[in-house]
Image (cartoon, rainbow, N blue to C red; front, side):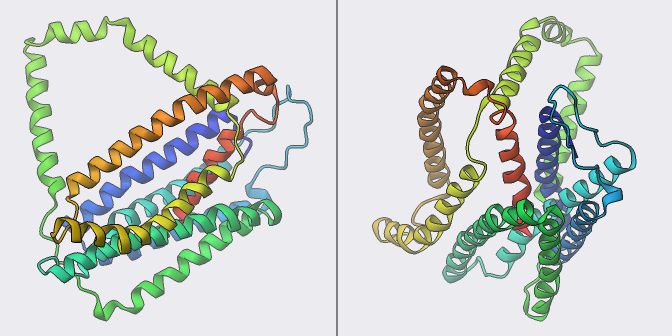
Length: 347
């Protein structure tokens, strides 16, 4: 659609943020009003509609922009606007709504199929989530390799068409086993209590501010120029990184996904049984210990990534790669590929 690099980055970021936030809505509706069994087919139908619109726009020439044939980089290509832009965003955010509903309902529906009051049921829940991550990672792997190859060589309409057909097939497969599903009756959501407490706190703060008790704090926040400066500096660094970083467009999505595909069965069949024998407990490792381990590994990963990134930038600067036209926008292409592939795989 001939978006600029910064414009395309905003579109992808807004899409992904919306999809993740709508997962909270899907989980809330499943807990408080409907059931996860109802939310999932509704969400998949919405996602199907979004993918169908995008596939239709990619296939019909009158609904998309002509291919940009300009070889002069100083002459920008035609930008999408009007009805074509509206159709693009309508399909994109229908897709985000469907993805959010699936994220908020499908894991919950799987959890409800097992009895958490028995040791066997609790072990089965643990196994289910491990293989849920495994299956989703397999879907992402297919999306960022096979589907992307189809899009590059056959056209975007074929990539969206495969995704649309896949999500459509998943609906009757899910409904096929309806008679044996365990369906939990909605009994309220923790989000209700959180929102109630949050609204009470906001009301209290608002009343306090109106009465003038916290005027000094408000003035100090508004008159502090460092917050604006820091934000501007951060935005400049983000734009700079988006322009000069370069990696192969498939390397970043594929390798973490392959690692998760290997790790999920190893974690379920080797690591967890080993720690159950060591600790002689049913859970083997508490949830807090698992979260702590993940945080420590994330810190180690960031600590390793920092010197690697410094070295990469030094080499890029010394060899003149920063000004190479093929480098600019390559990270953006990667982010589009990685992020837009996830909803297809999730379906």
